[in-house]
Amino acid sequence: MEIQYGLDARLNMLGDEIVHTEKKAQKKEKKAMSVSLYGNLFFVIVELVTAIITSSQAVLLDAVYDGIEFFMLLPSIFLIPLLYKPSNEKHPFGYMQIETLFVVVKGIMMTAVTIGLIANNLNLMLHGGHLIDFQSVAYFELFGCILGISVSLYLRKKNKAMNSPLLETERKGWEIDSIVSLGMTVAFLLPNFLLHTPLAPVIPYIDQIITIFLSIFMLPMPIKTVITGIRDLMLIPPEQETIEDIKNTVEPIIGIYGHTQLYYDIVRTGRKLWISVYITFDKDTISLSRFKIIQARCIQALTEKYSDFYFELLPDIEFTGTEIEKLEV
Image (cartoon, rainbow, N blue to C red; front, side):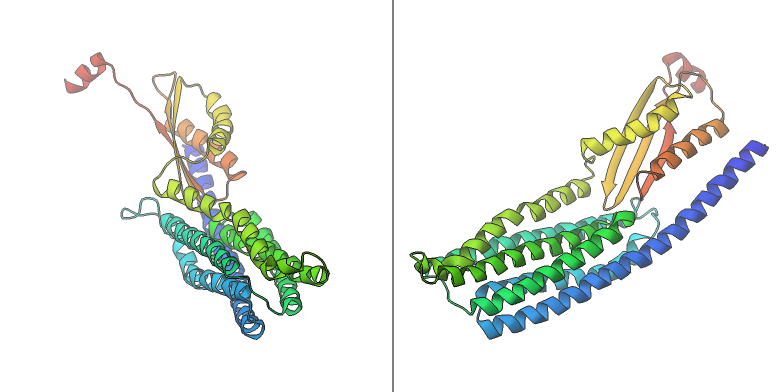
């Protein structure tokens, strides 16, 4: 009886600690997302002003891209508290799938804008290119690159402990902006070196060529985000690497108590892993307290590797024909 009470007390303490940790994580995530939001708004305004002053179509398209990022980011600030609500009968997987759906929509938007960016620059090339104030745009893009790298590094640092798909998507967005800005900086500095060379006729096409190259380079990132999100929405098991890591974590613990068979049911919704392990013991009976100990030790081991998960250990009960007949009697 004392063992049972002590185990229940430890499980209750673990539950209280998880709730407290989740509240702190919610505040930290919301703060990090706010930094990304205000940084994005500032960048969009500066891009629009620069596009008007320099008449640069590339900067204007970049402003439209970041504008879409901003309007997709705005509702995510209000989405964060919802993600920390517990699951219930109406939402057995909690509200994590809302996050996954949001990430998928954002990934589709990023993919569409990137393809639109490629198409627009191809159109500019077919119509003789476009001459602009290269030097002014180069300085602006260098500033944009530094800002993008700063915010990306900040989000990477903050997301190490939280493992938030929303923050990771934002980080990737800023990373893409940094790459694009760096490419634009190089593109708009090249005309100074090509002006009095045989390559001078290429100058009107330089920014389009670099932009198309960078767009093709960054296109796989949002496509991968969409594919991963769709897998999670369809409750398809996560990548094999994650499954094997979970197996390697819990099987040594369960193996101590003896079993004949294990069956795993693992899905991911947003940032959360849902892990169910069905176990067939090599003994006819096992005490409830021992069963709880196995589960508690598995949870403790998984906590060291995963920040947000649900774990349950379930007995896989199989009845023989004789046993079924006895139950019916």
